[in-house]
Image 1: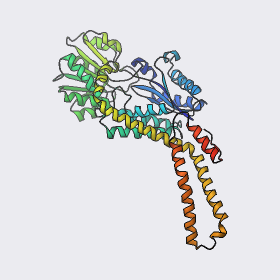
Image 2 (image 1 turned 180 degrees about the vertical axis):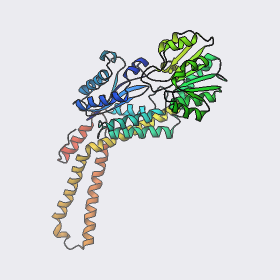
Image 3 (image 1 turned 45 degrees about the vertical axis):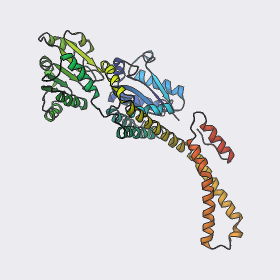
Image 4 (image 1 turned 120 degrees about the vertical axis):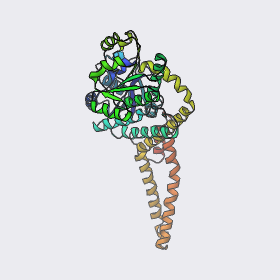
Length: 423
């Protein structure tokens, strides 16, 4: 079975398209059910994050697998297939492996090295595993991707700035508002990104921070940790009226803040309002950007700022890419070893048979030996054969140039008169 990756990401897709493609929990249940019923896909893992929606699959053939995964994305999300044509990309076999490792390492993210992506990759695999959608092909692939991601984080400085989204947004807010010191801010949400936002605002000298969340209990926990005030979403209009800066980072499936609500609030105030939407799908209605006095920035609007910052980490990125390449090579050798196991086993059995036959042929000549002497002769014979077979086996695992692997396997099988295993 071959490995195929297909999807869209922030590199070529708009936030609007990523929002429409995003998979919620119930959507994943249906998606994996479709995978189980499609003969063109053996295994699959759906990775749906702020920056990407991708499917990694084990497929019998590229074309049929490509069409099946494209249908999965389009039909599961009720999206016309032609809307995917431009941003859709696919990676096959070695390139699919490399792409996943780069994703897990944070090298394909909008914020290079974003720390959340590695846990998102792990969670996506665990979810697919729980749905019975993974097996002998994708399980080692995702375990190896996790290893690549961990190595990049421990051996390089990539990913050392986990709040890059918030930092970039805060910079824009400071420029727009003329600084953040002693300003009043409202943070919508109480998850990881919201906590980063509060921490960053505190570091920038923001005076009052109000945390609003659908769950009042979670808002209270974060507020107590950060010396903020808290409330539920019903307090949004009041919070907007008294805030200079609003940061929204919830996991809601739909809009949290309508443009009409913001417009109504702006009729009661004269100072500008900076609104930062860090959620995908977006929390804030995009048309709010047209409200007088409102400066709205979302993930799409942060791309240019974040891209410029990434240019300063060239050395660490280069080292991270070296790690990814090493792990890709390591995985390729392991994968080939697993596939070649029957051929290697047959080759070693042939060696054992040769040793046994020669010992039998010289049985009478060895009859005068003591048991210890005979054991030494047998051990030496087996050792010689094992050493003679060692290098061909190692080279067979390492010879991985595209298009040549099967030829080397066939040649070895032919030379030793062995049965060539199925690809």
